[in-house]
Image (cartoon, rainbow, N blue to C red; front, side, top):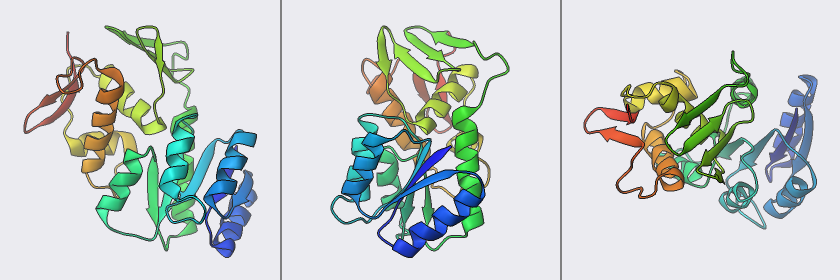
Length: 226
């Protein structure tokens, strides 16, 4: 597994790099957004750890540009604790976030969880989920709407698969958050709203009147039952 760590704090990057390499990862470091994008274009990464505040190009811009080309999982680092900043990160395609200062053991746990989900082999590795015009290949982690391949982030993919596998089941925002992000993930439940909205924008013909990912007002979200 190869990981890119991007932060303008040199000692922080070196510390993360040292700890992750001790766990067997290959780790590259960058200290500004421009260099991060150059490394991203030159190499294949399994995960990117990306600071929000960077010189040259800020973390949100870097994340957006990465999302134009790849669905590689991104963990956003932020010194800000406001929920709004974290929601903006999800809007730009981040899969997870961790606030500074953080425990390196927590970061490692987040990395393992995301990589486990991103590389998880289903019990039936050739399983295909297909409902209406939406087709999901669980092994390749690809999604098609009709003949068009739709680029999803790792978490968008996981939300979609959870809803499709349990079509008709209504998930509250809290239960969907626990199912996809884990019970101990300290996120605002609005994170779920952001991901559902992005899925609708990408998959629905009219995201204001969705056909597949539906809302049970006052309860939660579900994938159409018939």
